[in-house]
Length: 146
Image (tube, rainbow, N blue to C red; front, side, top):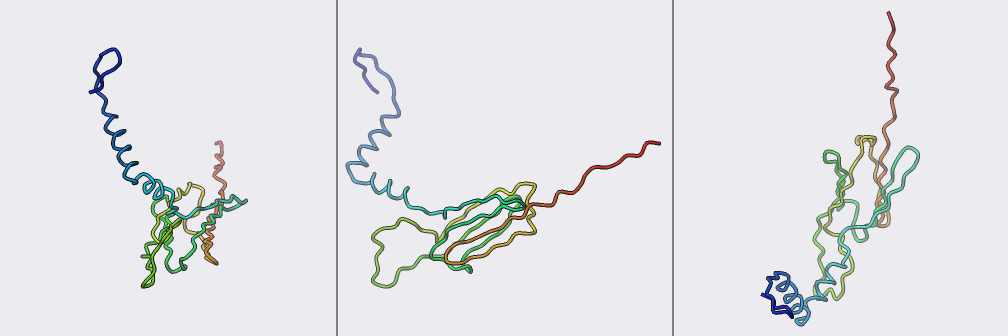
């Protein structure tokens, strides 16, 4: 319950959220929350449109091609990895700005993409996926008049 200057009372559920945020700030957990939200956990990608294809370039440092999975699920291209990142004995991670060892990226495939003709290559931490556009078939049907 909040009392206003004019003596009116009103309910405010947002005060609990505000109070919790102040307590978190005083306990030092807000910077930890902000840091976690700033850690890049999904690889960044570029999508390039070409005349007869689309190319997805995805930066995935620290993984090998055997650790990356590429699948087509219904109308989505799914790129994922699920590898546990292990530190050597005696090592401690003091700062983490990226973690691509476990991710799942999905790209919607349009009706014009040939899902049976997808090519992928991986070199120096860069995954390149080529999505070929289906050839347009002439759908015009000539009807003869009798």
